[in-house]
Structure formats: structure tokens, C-alpha cells
Length: 299
Image (cartoon, rainbow, N blue to C red; front, side):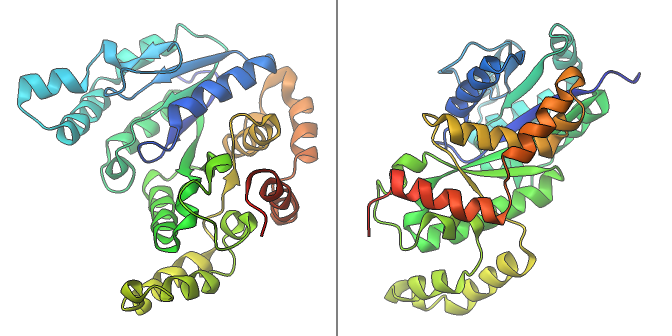
């Protein structure tokens, strides 16, 4: 395969209902408002209710419904079949991509978690895209309402970490729908606790307050040690209605996939934007406090 000009983009993953397609639509509109040419790519063969008009749509190649009808498979098995079929027929995708010269690509991927934890088809697709000339990062969306349940939040942390190891790509983890974080109950701690993922022993104490969960104390403690000791996971808060939060995610993604360092004439402007929109620990603490005041109930 011949060497091509570098193409930048992001692959959006996350559990069903985390807001992937809505994020893709909002981020594309935001980037276009910054004069960036964007191609939206639907790589979910089971999603026929997209909130955006796709530049490229995998349903023109294969759909979950067709596979279920022709191979007598359930929806999960059919989705895995579709992704493995796409993996073997990526020339179709490359031909479509060539129609969008000098575009930034946003790939909307399926929500089936096993595709990013132990199945290799999506990982292989991403590797082949990189060989084609892409510089990509994963944007993993996690619904913020999981923060209201300490046990579920541990599960979220493990899912995020496992997908990072499996995909072997730069990854930006996002707590989506932060404006709805307390729709299923009050958070035990401030938002910065969940975004920075620092002292999780407090989370363990909250879990042990539940008599049912107390018997899993040793397991939960071991899981928390893995997450905390290696500092692999942190999150950026996001509400798509908040332009500042979109800007923060954009800055983190542009740094992760290298766009900020290699986008031609935009290079210098992007570096300045990156430096002015810090995403380090200090920023997390200060800005998360502001977000808590804006979206969460007062203590």
C-alpha cells in the first residue's frame, strides 16, 4: 500500500446509550464552525436512526438486519459478523474515504462492548486505517449517570481500561451527559472525584455501606488498586450543549491524535489553542468545580 498524506480523525466508542451518535453530530458541527472540513462515517451497521447525514455509511455495504435474516443470527452475533465482514472488505471503505480529500474524519462505531474488550475486528480495522494514512485516537463515551452508583462506576473504570489495552490507541475518556449525571440519584462526591480518578478508597467505603456489596470487599479493593496504582484512566466531562466542554474535548483529542502538531496552516493556531486549554490535573480540579456548580445539585 502506497504512502499517503496523513489523515486525522477520531473513532467514537462506548456502551449503548452513551450518546455516541449525538456526540459525533455535535462535534462535527463544532469543528465545522471552526472552519474544519469534517466527514462523518457511520460504522455501526445496526444503527438506522442516525441524528446526522453520513458522508460514508456502512449500511451500504452490510446491515445487521440483513445478516439476521440471511444467517439466522441474533442481533449481537449479527453485529460481530458485520464488523468481521467489514474487516475483510475494507477496500470498500478506502474507496469511499478517497472521495473526501483534506477532511477530518469522525467514525461512529457500534456500542457492543465486547468489540472493544476481546474481539479483534474493530482493532484490526483501526490498524488498517492507520496503515492507510490515518492518525486516530479513540474517544470513549461513558454515561455520567453511572457515577451515582459506586459499583457501576468501578465497572465503568474497568471497561475504559480494558478497551485502552485492547485497542492499543491513544484514548480520550469522556463522561457524557454530565448535565444529567444525577438523573438516577445524587453523586456521593464532587465531579472532580470521578474525572480525576484519584483516591478511590472513598469509593470503596461507599460500596461497603451496601450490605449486599460488602461481601465483595476484597474483589472491589483489588480492582480499585489496579485502576488507582497505574493511573491509566481519567475523564473529561461533557454536555453537548456546552461549547466550552466541547472545546475541551476537542483540544484533548487534537493532542491525542497529533492533529494539533500536523494540520498544515492551522498548526501554529492549534498549538496556541492547546496551550491555552490545559487538560492537566490542575485544570481538571478547577474546571470540574465549575461544572459541578453548573449541573449538579448543591450539597
